[in-house]
Amino acid sequence: MQHAFDHNKFIGYVCEVTPQYIKVQLPSAKLLHSFYLNGQIYYGGTVGCYVTVEGPEYGFLGHLYEMNLPQGERQEITDKDIHYEDSAFHPIAKVEILGAFSIYQPTIITKTVSLSPNIGAKVYSCSNEQMTSYISSFGMKSDEDKALSPIAKIGVLTTNKAPCSISLNSLFGRHCAVLGTTGGGKSWTVAKLIELVSKNTINKCILIDATGEYSSLDPEIVDSIKLGTGEYVFNYNNLTIDDIFYLLRPSAKVQAPKLMEAIRSLKMIKIDNNNELSVYYSTNQQTGQIEKFNLQKASKEKRTYQTFYYKHLGLIEDNHCNFEFQYLAHQITNECIWDTQQGNTNTWGGRVEADVANCVSLISRINNIINTSEYNNIFAFKKNTNIHQEDIRTVIDAHLQKSNEKPILRIDFSEVSFDYQVREILVNAIGKYLLNRARNKDFISSPVIVFIDEAHQFLNKSISDEYFAAKPLDAFEQISKEARKYGLFLCIATQMPRDIPLGTLSQMGTFIVHRLINEQDKKAVESAASAANRNCLSYLPVLGEGEALLVGVDFPMPITLKIEEPINKPNSGTPKLKRKE
Image (cartoon, rainbow, N blue to C red; front, side, top):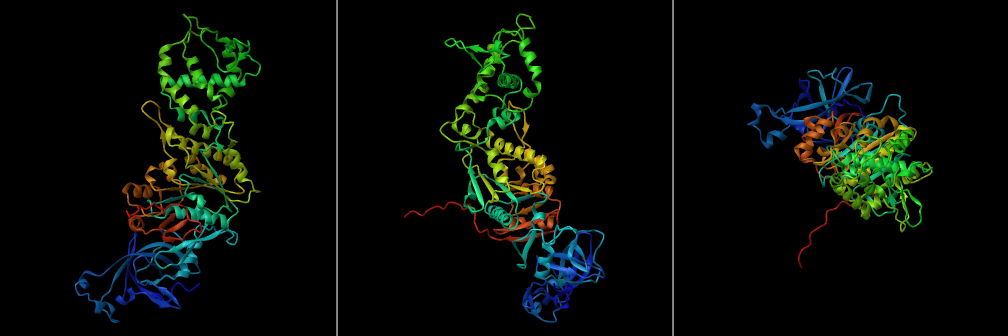
């Protein structure tokens, strides 16, 4: 690598040192201009360029972000004087110190407040080779074998077009967020990241494709399944009771207790292999056979029910949906009874019409979900004999097997309904399943990356309305907090970071931020990204298409880069209006 302190790349001298920045005085305005050295272009004192500052034992890498002239020289400026060799103008640059490096190991950048440049230290333009070397070493531990670590080119720096190759462990190892408004290049970046992982690692990825725009990814490396058609389902038996409550949203006072009692009763029917509860079953008038569909509790003694309940308490209260959903509405009606019969605490009373009336809206929601194909095609509440249905969990398991050569599993949500928060519940259920596998240490030897596009559609803080108390959908928040050490990494992409739960966003270790204009979005990034300061965030509203700010825990300095176009571009174009003939 070229020497960091080459006199041919000299710019100026340090004239002021503060905790936030240093000021550099350029002896001549000629040093503002770009120049060529050994066939490589250097940008001199251009705003946005990178510089190195000389020290006795340590050097410093800095980012030039502001240029001005002393007040007394501003009124005398002319084009001739600026270009004159012995110009009397002495521009002053503000430089943010990004990190320090030992002059004996110039490729290792360290973020520290214990070192600072001296007044009078020389400042030099930083070469492309230097910057490329610095960036590729970010996040690399001293004991890490660089030959085995996957390093891939993600793009070029926007200032000097230096190739920007980064460690994929640094990028994903602490989770990653890709942010930016529509048209900023967010989708292309996600496609590029998927491409880098598939080409440079042996690890598997799962892509939650909200709109189907990633259908253009190379089928040689991608397995795709589409949800909402009935071919692939997340069987409701694999949901939790909390998920059922999210879906049905019962009111707290009457509906929630009746729903819970109905679920308990149906789970008891499922467990009752020896007809211990026969006294509560109805009998078919024609065949005389016991019909084990519902429990008829009205005016019946409680003892047999209570004995069975406490005998199988663990299975009944295990938060799993081991019951027949299609009988739930009718069982809720059966639960609308008095607790006692004329003061007899050992017997249930008769039907309470007021409770039935209060549960009408809940029963209506249940019947609507059961009889609507959109929900059946996702959760399989009723078996569709016309379609061969495969469970999503089985598909995920098969994909994560080492024998599966395709590294990417794309789950297409474009046909999944937005009603009843089905999308959020479904993605949360998938997240819970992956989290449980991670807790079982299934991914430690071969980490898995989960990409969630349009994450604001899925990662809402809670589901609530005027009747249903708020419930958190927090599977991916839990993944962001604890799954890193188990080898389950998260990469979310969204155009509205303000809508991502702060608990999730704050756990992202790496941010790739495209153009952001909304002030709340910028504040969300500033709050979540500890490495982002106001100087670098000021570039966000003016970033061009495909340009992004890269900041992260493993990156000692923010980087502004142009993301390289992916080979297989997502279908994210905007339909065009047509001129009238």
